[in-house]
Image 1 (cartoon, one colour):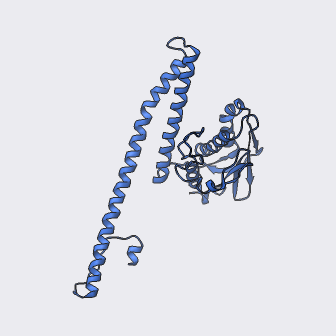
Image 2 (cartoon, one colour):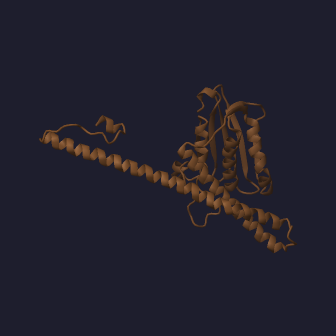
Image 3 (cartoon, helix red, strand yellow):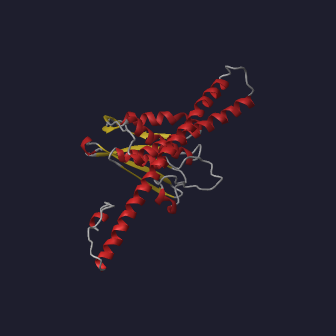
Length: 278
């Protein structure tokens, strides 16, 4: 029974006497075989599910590449001049294709994290440069909507991290903030708390905040704070779950604090000691 409790199934008790204990042993052996069979079937189902997800995401991604390429070619008027109405429609196609590609990429990343196959290459490097990359990439969108992004870090802090993956975390959190703050009055602040063993990166916004009853599931896969059919901001519901997985791959943690009507702060911790990192 202790072995079964530890997850070792299929073992049998050797007891041949036909008495009450023998009947109990026979029942136990049948149960052990059944559990082993069901466990193996569940594993096969999981493998098939993962293979199907990998195949379908690849097949969805493949036709999107030429769609994006031809849309860019048409918008550049390489195949002839376009009217403003035609350009507007092509821009919608381009935006939709980009959104679908992001969802597919999220599905692939979530799958890799679940299987432990996501490659994270950590190097000791300046976290300020990583933050700058994420902020600068989203600055045009912020400027267009008259949203202010403030970065409160003016010194170098060396932290072991995968720049591409932590940039992905920062970009996701900043995009979420840009989605919820109001144009003209929106303010997003990025600040770092530095200590001997770790740093804490905070992304704070003055958006509407998250309802208290919705805060518990923020980092679950496919979780949406706004589940209405008319919600303006689309997405896979995987972004925060991926952020959580990437931060944990660095040996850190991620959390959120939100006050409805005031704003939200997402924070994640990265250890400075490379030995404490996975």
